[in-house]
Amino acid sequence: MVSPHFGPWSFGPDQNSFQTLDFEVGEVVHVELDGPKDAYVVRSVIAVRQRQPDGTGCPELDELNRARPGDMLLEEAKGSSLTFWLGDCCEWCNDAWLLTFHNARSDDLDEDTDLDDPLLRLASEEETRALSVPDDSTAYCIVTNHGNGRDERRFFIVASRVEIQRRPRAAGTHP
Image (cartoon, rainbow, N blue to C red):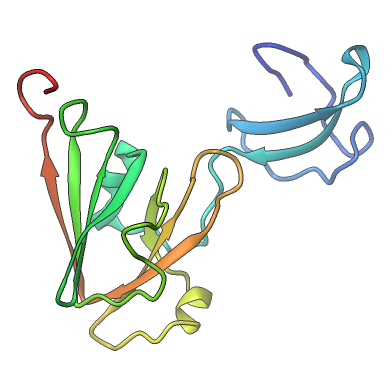
């Protein structure tokens, strides 16, 4: 294991107090150290971007995930549609997106829900079994705080379809 600031250190169960996990070469990880400065011991290693369940990728949402917007806010709940604003800071600073779930149902989301650093994906088979999903709908998952170590809370939306509208950065200067 190598860091731009410390190390290198031996990495394995003989040298450390945790089970070695299956990481890929070059994968960015969060390392927790313990002990005196001249004899650190690695206490935990977790991937910065947590792996998601197999089969949960969603091509429709790939562009949003690649953009890695820091903020996701419920902009409008109108009828059976939920529309979210995704971006960083504001539309003067960066591109933004509107993501609308049509014929949507979610028990956990409201305008105060914290959806920072979202990862958008399909719900896994196991997650879908816990939801009531009509034949004409799909279960989606919003994973929060993705890319900051362990993922935080997951939110689920069951919807018949999603619609994405890209909003290019506003011209001019910030008001």
